[in-house]
Length: 319
Length: 270
Image (tube, rainbow over all chains, first blue to last red):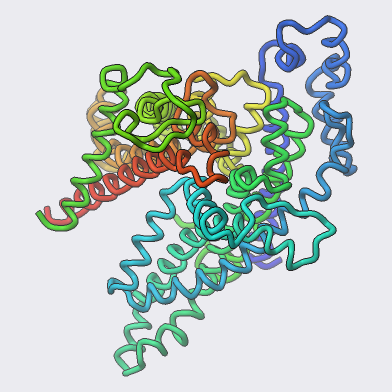
């Protein structure tokens, strides 16, 4: 077995461990109260019958370890359980919402990735000159701003003042692709703005890092033009770190989506989760949390594997 | 004063301004907190410089008291996170062995998990109050402080001067106070500002989602949430607290960036 396969296997193993750990953390997180979860959900005025019913529904009469493994095994069989508030199967609740969230994330990724590459390259090409300075300042500001600040500025401008885009991202399966795209354009541009800033800064850093290598100086000294140096010498070597950056930012997108979905009342997974946190509907929260965590962990794993596969230097542990 | 210094000065002024606002809230607020003084969402006027909110309360008063809640919780969470993070990092680096393994693996696990999602999971069962918010935020964030503190301490406990002090027969307390602490403090301090601004954003997001500070208390995130329905009618009330959050976070970041740059440059000159 080559060193590379062994490293990749080890990374996959770590991801599986992290997934298991995430499930344990989510389970502990929802069982952390020293008292009785049922009491906490229903409040002090709950009748004893209601408490007993809820305890039975949550399986609280069994020990925590048994409950965890019951939950885990039904998860592995693809059964996420039932909602406490409306007794609906969580699988049915999630289906359409998951698709909506991935649709939004996909739209953002399609807009952001080429744009971030282009802007990152421009900033690196004009390093320390005006375009770079403008881009650097704008992205620094964008990173420091809360998502809802950007979202409300966009809303006020594009939906209220200009009336170009719908302020509420209502989406339904009956709509065709273009209608759906039109509906998500505002939340998508908000997310694009936030993610683009991170992605562009990291792309710029990756290209500049390569540009400081001695072989780039050689290329410059032999008389190659700056454009040729960037596109023929630097870019091929910067691609691995850039791909890594892109995947890492997609993982970031998974979290950013929560706040943005709530702002635009978009029927996605994030909005579902926030709704059910305030309703204290624990099974739904656990299921959503696990899906978010799994997406995040898998994307991070992909980023690491891409980095290791492309950069032999990472295959040897630093001493 | 050159342009860079001017920017730093403005950032510092903004931070001091908001800190003073939080500290002297009852003295400078023009109205009682929570007092309905007018119709909802009035434009700004001499009586209400920032207009009124969704229940006709003076926005400036809400903002001033909001500064207090936001800064208090974010600061408390950052301090707790640094207290736990730096001590556990130091312990892990100096003891090594099983303690280090357990702490490091736990932190790896916590970091492989989006903090907002985990906070939501815990808030679905915990009662939401200042105490749980501070604890949850600190718990999710101590991981980064731990890594920094562990890495910084590790480079010291493996250094020659530390070995020499140990061979001199110095006590653990002496080693801690005179060898380790002075050396890990600078990186920790510059991290402090960044973590603080992250905490402000984190708390604001939670409150905006309705899962952070609960009424009748209100931080800046809650103010955005309370007034968000106005935006559909072109009312800019939610932008007022949102701008305050943005301004404070950007200023803290600029300040940290500037101070760190200066320290690094100063080191090089020496």
